[in-house]
Length: 294
Image 1: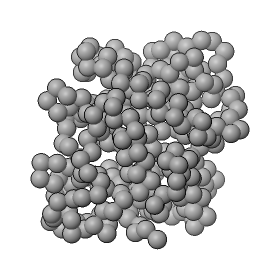
Image 2 (image 1 turned 90 degrees about the vertical axis):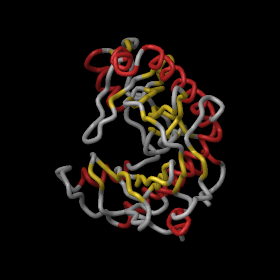
Image 3 (image 1 turned 90 degrees about the horizontal axis):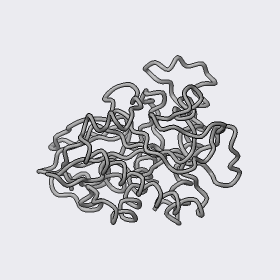
């Protein structure tokens, strides 16, 4: 049974930040990313951990970084060996941690959509566009798009990210950088979607983050996980309605059913919701990697 980690506490390591899921430490000139088993819903971190979640996020990210690393360099230096003083905490780091290059993160969430869902579906119904990209009339919820589209958003430090247009990206990072972000994001998505579909998963949409080391663009954060992507089972896919997914949908449905006001603090989750959510994360890993989570 793996160690369940809701929050890390490593004396001797410099904590840089705690995100909704990851704890970030400075380690020499590099960064140590630790994916905890925390889960957020409706932008609130819940008090109940999901066993194996952090390991799934880390191991699936490593899988994609290794599989698609020929498209753009990634930030991972090691996921198995950590220099002192981090080496003293191997039991808590094992399987859920990455030693990474420090970059200058770009202030853009690089979202790619291959299907019409979520906020994209909401925008399309209102305007016929998604992030300024015009789409054909008559599309249904969950329809596959004629071609994947780049639909960036802001990178909010609190609250929700906000969809922006490509022109907004140009204004924030410059024309050449914006074109590079769009091109690389679409390349990664197309390759990943083509890999995943015959293995039973449709990647409806996903988000990428990038940083700079000097002028070199680096793929950072996580890669094509159930937290950063909308994974649908290919079997039973039926456009015209919302689709089941390999993520925290069980949690969202439960929270809606109890009438929670979506304000902190979040409620404790019952064991059956925890186990079903854990099973979905593990199933996504198994289908994509080809074997059970170690």
